[in-house]
Image (cartoon, rainbow over all chains, first blue to last red; front, side, top):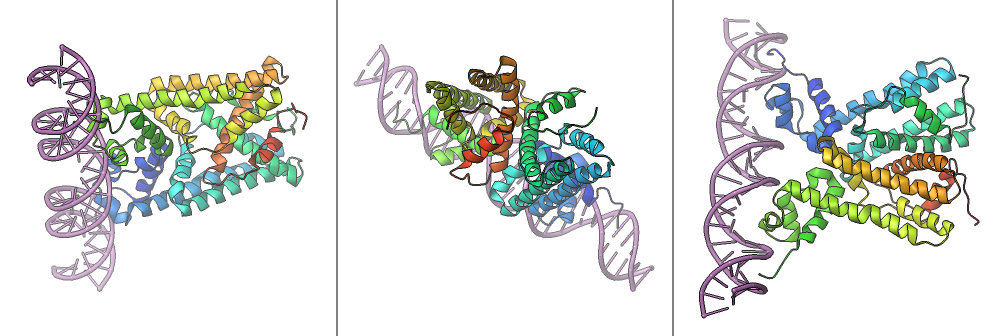
Length: 187
Length: 187
DNA sequence: ATTTTTATAAACGCAAGCGTTTATAAAGAA
DNA sequence: TTCTTTATAAACGCTTGCGTTTATAAAAAT
C-alpha cells in the first residue's frame, strides 16, 4: 500500500466536528477532502455512501460522548466528588454540544437515529437518577429530579451559547439547581 | 401589473416555515419557488439578496412569535387564568418552535442576529419574571425563578421533539414545575 | 392609445457537490 | 521479481443552486 495520508478515523473525526458545527449540511465530502488536503476518492474508499459515513460518525459520538461522562464520574470516590465532577463535565461549554442538537433534527427523517437518541437520552437520565439516588433521594424522587435536571441542563446550554462562560459559572448553576435539588454536601 | 401569483408575504411565510424546519440550509430559492409554483425570478423581484430575505423572515418571526405570547397572556383577567394560558402557549408543541433554535446557530456568524436574539430572550425572560412577580414572588425571586423556568421550558421542548404530545401534557409539566415554583392557585 | 410599471417566465453562465470511472504509485504477498 | 492490494489522484457526467439577463404580458398611469 502507498503511504497512508488520511485514515478512516481522520474522516470520522472531521465529520464529527463538522456535524457538531453545522449539522447534516456540514457533511460535504469535497469540502472535507479539501480540509484534509486529500482527494475525495479517499472518502469513497473508506465509506461506501455518505449515509454509512454518518453512521460511523454517530457511532463515534456515542463512544466518546456519553461513555466518557459516565466513566469519568464513576471514578470519583466520594459522593461529593462525584457530584462536583459530574457538574463540571455536564455544564462546561464545548463546541461539540450541538452534535446531539443537530442529530435530533436529523432524526426527524431517520427513525434508526431517533431510536439511538432515545436510548442515549434514557441512559443519561438513568445515570443521573442513579447518582441522585446515591445522594439520598428515593428511587422515584431521583427519577423525577433527574428529569428536571436534564431539561434544565439543556436549557442552560442553549442560553449560554455564543457567550463566554465565566470561570465561576458553577456558582450560579448550583445556586439555581438548589431551587429543585435539596441534597447538599459539606462545603 | 399582471395578476399577482405570489406575494412578498407568501415568500416570507414559506421562508419562516422552511427555516423552522431545517434552519438556514432550508432557505433554498429554487426549491421554494417550486413549492410556490412560480419562477424564482419572483423571489429576486421582491428581495435583492437572500440575506435581505432572511432579515425579512426574522422580522416576521419577531412579530408573530413573542408578541403573540405576551399579548394573548395579558388578555386574561385573573392571575390563574394568565398562568393557564401562559402554560398552554409556552409548552404546547408547534413545528415552529425550532425557529429560534436554528436562528441561534445562524447567529454564530451574524452578530446582528445575535443581538436580536439576546433582546428577544431578555424580553421573554422579563415578561415571565413580571408574571411571577404578579403571582406573588419578590422581584428578585421572580427573576431567578423565571430564569430557571425558561431553561426548563427549552429542555422540555428539546425532549419531546419527534414525540407526540399527550393531551394531558400539562399535568406532568405542572407537577415538575412545582419542584421549583411555589405559587399555587386554587383548583 | 401609448407608455410605463409590475410580476413572472425562460434561458444563461457559473460554482459546488455527488458518486463513478480510470489511472497510478507504493507497499505487501506470491 | 512479478502480482496483487491499498490508498489516492484526475477526470467525467450529472444535478442543484445562485444570481443575472432578456423577454413578455397584464395592469396602471399618462
